[in-house]
Length: 116
Image (cartoon, rainbow, N blue to C red):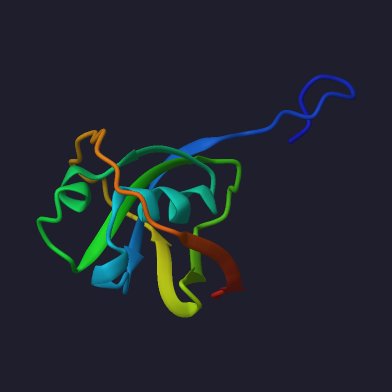
């Protein structure tokens, strides 16, 4: 977006992303932080996600420069095994808390496809 003469402004937005199909053995704050960092700067991991209250999906709040709706398939690499995870922007506001807990694991995240 062009503002003043010759100056391009970068826009950012804060959104919740929802992660589907995360394997139980990879379920940790560290994993969700790495997943969130693919789309932007991680602000927080949902309290229900960090406390492992349910496993249907995990939620991460990020600041992103992307103005497009986030809907992609990413690949998690853990000990040579590949896991596919769907990452979508949440359309509704989620009531989530901040968690400071973290769990160390060796997970690499690669973007492999964007879905239309």
